[in-house]
Length: 465
Image 1 (tube, helix red, strand yellow):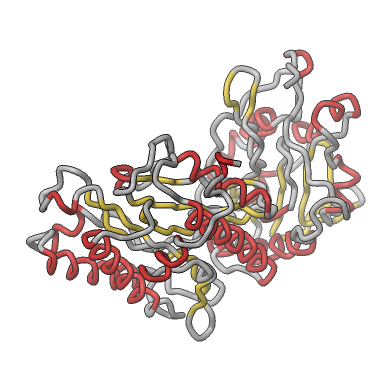
Image 2 (cartoon, rainbow, N blue to C red):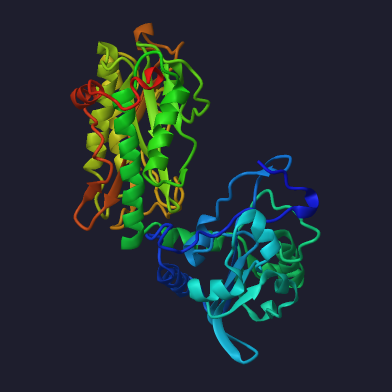
């Protein structure tokens, strides 16, 4: 890796080039333009909204993390670059001889910088490719006459963290936000930092047909990874080798990223909900909770299967697994339009409570929280925990259904249950008449999983090749 000296520091992110040699199934610019129109409909009269791009985040020293755009900003613009802001007006505004209802400020192109980071859009390409009528260089934001004082409300979002000041760049995020604060200092009571998130949640919780296509692709890739993991998993492997199988399948089938750090928790780690260290060696007695999600063009899957490392569930593991499976099956029946968002959880919670009481693992119903301590559902989309209103389920919602039971060592029950952690998670599309399980391509029953694990995996004998 070439070292970039301080005087050569340049923005890291670049836009995906729209060319037949690259991805040709990105969301069209018309999608993002329509989303801006839908947001405009939600804005009260005589208001304006500003949404800033995400900053570049530093990993260590002169190495930054790979750039990830703010989902809200991407949703509204399609731009995958930092140091940008979109301004959306409720009513058209006049600027010189132009009348527009939205502005976009972006980085200007610089051929010398592009040698290091690749091409960015710049103002001309952003205007043409992102369907904005009025695009300006971000360095002009500080001097632009916005007349914020004339609006009843100015909607912004809480600030991102890790926004650093490039003292040589008057158009970076730090500078634009600083100048916004100066412009609105005397009218700060008009600035609302919370309502815009509510508007975006109302929009993003209902997926369009274009979004569902990308979600299905992300989920299909994730399912492929779990199928291959089940076939290849064997005692003696490590959690990180299991993760490597998942990551290989992700990238082989076109996923740009993982939607969140992959959880491959074996043995005692199966009882850690967001475990992601993934360094343990796996033994025949271990269960492996594989909670993974490919990210495809910004949209992420979130699917979990629990696998016995040796390919066979023990009697105790099977008993707990059946409770979780039955809880998920019962929760599916509540995935209908009009039902409360938490209806699947309430149903799963009762099934798990009854099951643990019957096995004697808990003595009273309220003790179920010791072993089932999380919610059953969340929205899914550009974020793995996508925003939403958590109101009644509606067609176009995509949610998870993920009951689980986790019994760590030292729990107040018979030691034969210790270190059994089981979660089953699927991605559910709410339809006008019910639901569709988008991740049903990965088996869920004990019998189906054991049969799948008996098949030859591509990576089963990888170290012997």
